[in-house]
Image 1 (spheres, rainbow, N blue to C red):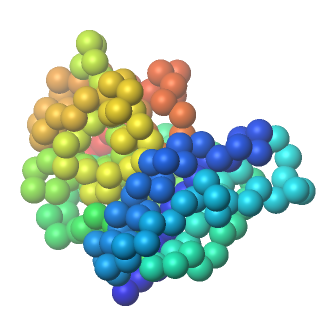
Image 2: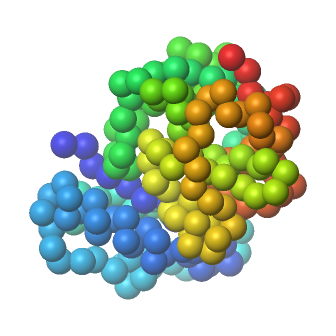
Length: 202
């Protein structure tokens, strides 16, 4: 079985949303490995003394136990286009270190680093290759109720009632104005939103 990982945003030498990462990690450990002893990332994460106050990506690799913790300075990826990809077989319900199915789909459908895919499964909009999404209908932000992976930033935004779950079929996208990408490293800032009509292509 593949190892799993958590990606934790660290800024000003402080890890963010640790409780949400902790919950997913321990739930995955229990469901996949039967591990009942809960680990506490707040205690296990030791911030290196040589990092700056910039944004870092902390990658925690684990199975039933922690295998590795790595800190790297973060450079955001710039996405200019999402390509709709229809695939009813793909699954990624756990944050596996082996992401080859998603990477293969991206390689097959994207021409450059500035492009990504938006996966449609059984007619429903799910995720991009590396993020959840939220779409804006002019009143509120909706996120697919059936994502491939339930992300930690998505969970926090749902908890804070900044976004709301909705069953979104691909034909429903015409009723939305904007889309924003959501993951642990990306802030939910409206200025980051893209116009759907310019950002998504078949």
